[in-house]
Length: 138
Picture 1 (tube, helix red, strand yellow):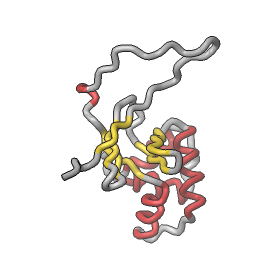
Picture 2: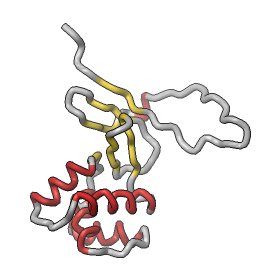
Picture 3: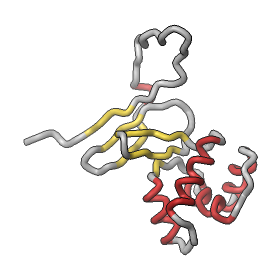
């Protein structure tokens, strides 16, 4: 399957119109069939490097549309930085503080024994696990 075919199928499966910008960004995200963790800025730079004419605002809007359609999972590592993950299944992440990089953590090693009860009238929608890593001092 070509990157273009994979992107078209990905967008069609979510009933998103395959505009030129969406196709370019979808190919960058899933064209090779591998999962990615990207920021809007890193995706914008990649798209520019590939010769695609797309604004940073369009990248943000497209990432939001992909999230709303269930194609991406947004992972917030602090109040100002979000990563977008093509793997939408529940799984933990490592955040490499020294490199500002997000990767998948081994889900089979994670054990959550108990969650607190949700307040009255609410339910737990999801649990995000981001394990922050940094080099040991000294």
